[in-house]
Image (cartoon, rainbow, N blue to C red; front, side, top):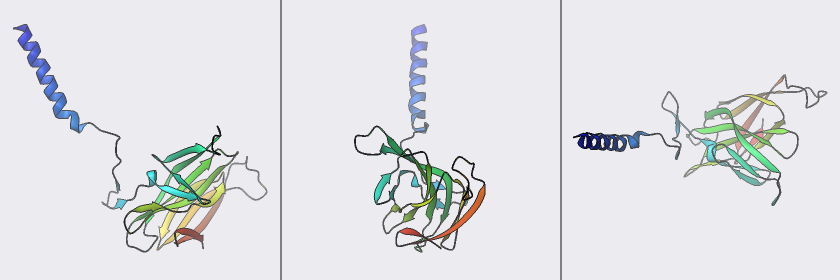
Length: 182
């Protein structure tokens, strides 16, 4: 009798595990980001961006590669947590504008502006434009195809060791696959 009860408990446990296995969270794919207003926001965390004619492909928002082939020194590129969403290439599809940070090839942390834009078939990363060395990004916004970035920088006479506290605002437009100052 005890053996039958144990077998029933084991079978019930196996059925319970089988029934709930499809409900367990997985990290295999990341769903597109949907805002509270049900608007699709393109996810640039696995996009390829262009830095000075060299492609850098992110995986889960980051990339690490040797500075030179065979070198133990690496350069890391990281997707920062500031985004703006809007149509910057006039195709009536939502695009993502973002900050990327690169470091490892010196003492600086270089901040770039880039976009993840819609194309005829899929989204693609843009050329990245340099914003500053060791600046503190504050925000990105899009207003009728004009991209405004705000960040904290240093005064011209201050060293890079000084905390950035001077507010800076710059505007860009996206034309022919790259940002241009406005």
